[in-house]
Image (tube, rainbow, N blue to C red):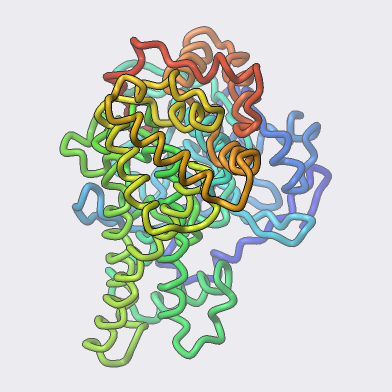
Length: 486
């Protein structure tokens, strides 16, 4: 069905076994107000921006009405949360439907913070304004950095407070995703012990995300290997820009290979593999340097869930799962080293590259160098402006790197261009994000967030305007703490 706004909804997810979701109606809010809206994303989805700003569109974005229908879906899933297994589900989110774009692509349209569902565990099902704005800002930054991610169509303030430690203004985020299928979705199906449900879910995921493996000799195995590959590539891209997700539970690991659930996330300023921002990650389980290991662990749980589909004999099925998981390390390291070479302007692989890269990172850690600005300085030959310049060892490293560049067939100008397209001028600096959130939450001023979004929309421009947003005050380099979005 279509309408003037441009909604063109399907809901293929409701064709799955009923155990995997709950039918859920909207929970109206008192006084919705559109505070952030993604014009470019709306256009790509085939939606009319102007009409979405009007009453009918706003009612849909607020959860007061569901386009082309009178119900949505809350999805069931499970998850290892900080290593502990729990049966979960959408406790404060509602899948309105799947938007079919003019190009024929399919995207989930989900409201986050839309009220209680059958899976709510004592909470109010609502969300606070600050965390919804954070997800909008960071997810859009990730998109423009070229990293697969869910995206944000809109943030609507509800006119209602949510009770946490204090009363906070409430909001609803409209999230757009290739799908909301998670490792935890498969854990849920496997945990219930229903082989038919698990098989139906696997067939659905293959049809939606990996149709090319449907004709494979062992489609379930090819599906597992495809998810492993996409997740390995995704995490490598996180590492290359210094992104720290903060809560890499299995329910936050997507089947599509998109980044999802921006709770206590942040970008690293000073390079340190032990960087943790989340207030609840007291053991550093999801520290920056641990992220590749943790997604590998999550994928092992995914493989366990698929064991009944991999082979009729369990021993052989387990063997196939283990062999597939072992490939993660190779894919990840290849993707990461390839990315690091590009950040250093290196076009082709040489034996000494690994040592060159690891030596640089060691120097950055020892000198407490800013991760993003170090590579930015190297791009423009301004090494003296980095913390590295204070190290006695840096001179030797710099000579080795310049000699490596000189040995290439490609010119120095070509090397610099390669670096410019892989070293962002700006990232969502933590102090800038906090400035935007404070202005919005405390003063109802969204101009700071909108300005930041503009700056982050072209991170590889290296423009004069971006200079101020690349600077990090000394007072902001230590002690930053984030909290799970509520």
